[in-house]
Structure formats: structure tokens, C-alpha cells
Length: 254
Ligand code: ATP
Ligand code: MG
Image 1 (cartoon, helix red, strand yellow):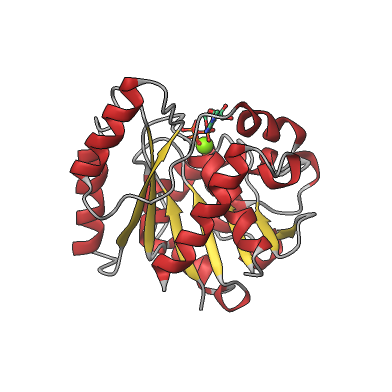
Image 2 (tube, rainbow, N blue to C red):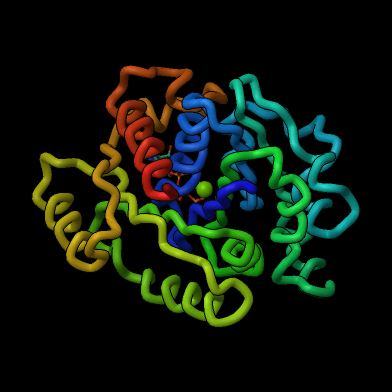
């Protein structure tokens, strides 16, 4: 059975995809069998891994609509132990269609169950909304990894996410847990970054990862080369930080 982790924050541009791709990469590098599920119609996780979206047999759209098996959509990446369930912009339409189907909240959970014996970890990259797709992620997952950008409005809107998690816990997924809060794009030279970090720690006592992710241009460059940071500049600050976070993830899930 795999450990399913949804990387979620309905705020846009906080580092969800960067975290999902790079944590997945370092988990795979440490020998875990990892599946990264791209659940965002933007398809950033798919492009970030250099996938040619024009030549896909099946994507998460078909899987969620029930016209393809999960297994048919999974592709191996050029990185050992790392597989991807890709997505294209069609997922936006698929989400609308999916809303009309039976068991619309549990479709991802059902699909992942068919492949869960093949992976140690399944990471889900969520879209920046509290949409049906995001809720499917929360219902399929055992844990939520919450990236929070160290900037002024960081904590705004998080109440809504925590509320949604509570509802999911009361309803379809009682075992959903916050795995940890990951401060991203930290600039320790600025007072603001440090203040926000302190506030995050106060707000989420005991739940904040020891490691924080620095603002690092190499992390922003890697996707344009279609590779995780570890395959682009493994000695960069960003690479070392994500490697450390992946280690913490393994420790936290015990
Ligand atoms: P969305 O909500 O649109 O899906 P996201 O939460 O997935 O966004 P990312 O795409 O990971 O966020 O990051 C937003 C932008 O910031 C991207 O251009 C990414 O390359 C850049 N970025 C992410 N993390 C860092 C970092 N630590 N340092 C510098 N740039 C970063
Ligand atoms: Mg993203």
C-alpha cells in the first residue's frame, strides 16, 4: 500500500508544483517507488518533468471520467523510480463532466487504489482552488503537505482550506492528516520573510517542517529544462532543501 500525499494550497503560485515535483524526485532517488499525479489542468508538473503532452495515450482526464484505466495513463520518467500520471488542459473540461458523474468525489481515490501496490508514495499536485479536483485529492490522500509562501498574505485563505479538510475528515476520509507545513520562497535576509516564518510556526505549532525552502532562481529555471532541480543543479540551495524535505517526509510518515 502506498502513502498518498496531496500537495495542496488553494492560493496560486505558492510552490505546490515545485514542491511536488522535487519531493517526488528525491523520494524516488532515495529508492522509493514514486508516482506523481498531476491534478492541475495547468499541467505544470507534467511539463516540469519534460513530458511531451501531444503524444500521450491517456491522461488523468480520461481516468477521472472512467474511459481509461489508471494504469494506462502512468508513464515512466527518465528518472529511476519516478512515474507520472500526466494531465493536459483538457482536465478543466473533464472536471465539469466529472461533476455530473456518480461518486464524483471519490473518483481519484478509486483510480489510485488500482495501482497503490506498485508505489511506496503517491504525490498529488493540486490546482490553486478548492475545486472538485482538489477535493478528490483530499479524499484520496492520507496526508496533506501544505506549502506556504513566506510573504505577507501567506496565512490568508488557509482557514478555508483547513475547514475543507475538516469537512472531508467528518465525511469521506476520516484519516486525512496534515503532514506538515512547508515554508517556501524564504528570503532569510528580509525581516518580512522571518516575521512570516515566525507567524507560520505560531499558527501551526509542531506541524512546520524543520527545513524551509529558500528563494532560489535555480528552482525556477529547472522546469524550463523539463527536469527536477536534482537533475539540473543538485548542489544548489534549492536542491539541498528539497532533498532534506523528502527525508523529513519519510520520517514523518514513519
Ligand atoms: P499554481 O498555484 O499556479 O499551481 P504553484 O503553487 O504550483 O502554482 P509553483 O508553480 O511551484 O507554484 O511556483 C510558482 C512560481 O514560482 C514558478 O515560476 C516557480 O518556478 C517559482 N518558484 C517556486 N518555488 C521557488 C523558489 N523556492 N525560489 C524561486 N522561485 C520559485
Ligand atoms: Mg502548480
